[in-house]
Length: 542
Image 1 (tube, helix red, strand yellow):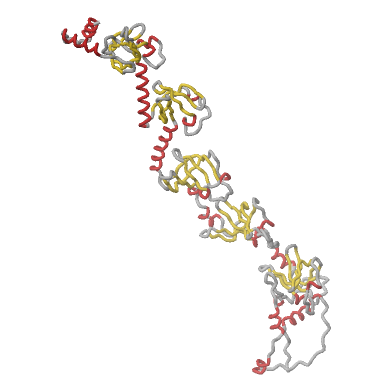
Image 2 (spheres, helix red, strand yellow; image 1 turned 180 degrees about the vertical axis):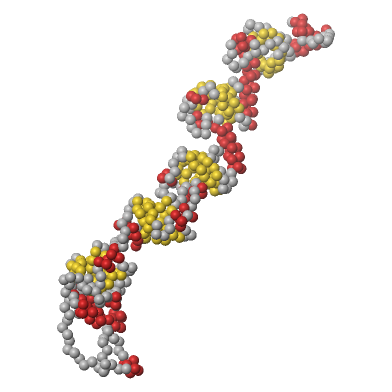
């Protein structure tokens, strides 16, 4: 054995080196004194690659043997195993077994390799460094990947930012992962590709936020639509288009004007890198329709639109997206007096209207629906001139008079003073709603939409009273001092307005008008009654 040790030592000499007997003996003694224990890690030099394994000089009395199945953790064929090491290579090994009788030492390179791999995995885990692994197979709940010969588990939830239903596509792929859990004793290693993607996403977001500025125009795809707006994917981040910034027009839900998957252009309103928020506006890139409303829709022009809202005071009509006009309830019909706009139009109706007023500064557009039809009140003045006798149905009775319908939706007032020659305290006691009444037209005001009628002008005049001697009219100061309230003043004080301000307009009565054929009213009688109602008297010379 000593001779063999000397031969090995001589074989290890480089050219030019000398080796004395004394040095050889010292080396031999050192080998004899060196004790090899199982579990010990040693570094040796490959001496021989044989048929059963690799002989390694570890500085002991005898060379250690590495069986081929202890060379590596990789499942390689025998030819490749024999080619892994060659004489002269330094190799780190672990002592598996020492035979005290023969002195044979069994070594393992595979265990050292595994320890080195675990040490590297621990280092990757502690430093949080990413590493490339190969996915070997799909298992329940995830996949198994090879990390330097160690089988590591990647849960399905850690494969991507979103859960992947089909994991087969990952088998055989090389992916970049991070070690998120490490337990050497249990041989447990958990990997995550998602952690790498999140870190990449974070860096991309930070760079993207640095590049964004308010007012900048960006393009993206709508990824979600909610009650309060739409989210647009800009690449690294999603921007929010609030519902008030989607369009100038009106809508109930953003889904009515924008949909998922739609490509949009928007303007950056604000950027908040700390909270990771980007506020966008789509309508900022669309001209405000109120800036050109006066030129496009001058007063008197006709427009078409859709009824988009009804309120107690009128109907809102969308002329174009973002441009709405109001049809006031008084502008819906010439003849009807609706209590609510829904009696004339319904939400969703397409209507034509006339522009009545435009105020771009206040963003107001006044429209009229009734103006699209001829004004029946103008026609009424031609059809029923003063003095015309007509029959109409009583539609309402009040303390101050009776309403009579001349045309559908067009009513006139017979003032209480025009019902009869005598005073009537309670018109409801004499007349009933729905009955017909024959009346004479006194006046029609198409602007104020008022009709003054009279019944008493068609009644026989009352019998004349006995004439009394009229006193001579005083003159000058005497007249002014003795003057008493005349009939005209009394009539004026007793006038009473009805519900929309109308009064019996006697002073507008046209005395030259001639009643229609068959009327029983004499022009002289009408003229006389009119003068009497106004309190006029003929002056008599004394």
